[in-house]
Amino acid sequence: MKFFIDTANLAQIKEAQELGVLDGVTTNPSLMAKEGITGKDNILKHYVDICNIVDGDVSAEVISTDFESIIKEGEELAELHEQIVVKVPMIKDGIKAIKYFSDKGIRTNCTLVFSPGQALLAAKAGAAYVSPFIGRLDDISTDGLNLIAEIRHIYDNYAFETEILAASVRHTMHVIDCAKIGADVMTGPLSSIEGLLKHPLTDSGLAKFLEDYKKGN
Ligand code: E4P
Image (cartoon, rainbow, N blue to C red; front, side):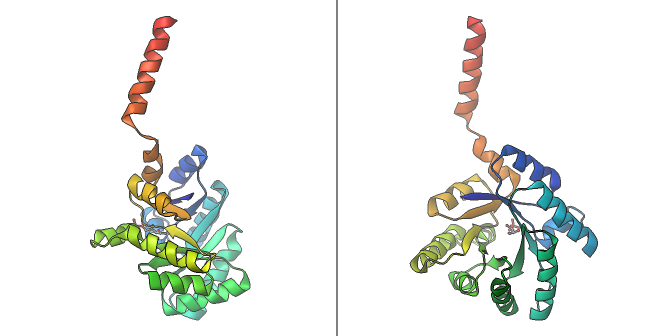
């Protein structure tokens, strides 16, 4: 399973990249705003900065919602860097745009996916990635991981090439469960990646090894 980090924070992206297990980055307009990145030029520059840190795909989201504008904005984003994947919302004009981009060889990430039917449409339109939001479903008492399992089943039935990018991952158990189900990618905060390192028996075991080493030296 590929690990993407879901942030526009350059320091956190660097930290994950240095760990050596990072495969890409996802961003969205809210994450950009959280970092204080506003205005078109600053946002475009920030995408390039991210691409220059990470070795992998970087999702850059369009804010347009009609077909013509999505195409114009997406083409501009795709021109920025070869690592850019154009993130398009799961709406009618978004699906048309994903098909258009796919025919032109521009890779897309279909975002804000909350049902198996939406994921099926994204795959048929030729999205490179589909982003089902696990955490936001859990937030409304609906099993987000079950959606990942349903999409996995459907995509395997027809050998769709669209990669399942489990999004809105909130913690380490989401990561582990996504890996068990067979999501192709997960995107989450740095804490969901670094949290995988932790186990109290590792800490106490290491402390004991170091203590015993000191006794003998
Ligand atoms: C996906 O690409 C989104 O950026 C993201 O995972 C949303 O997560 P949230 O529900 O924690 O905001």
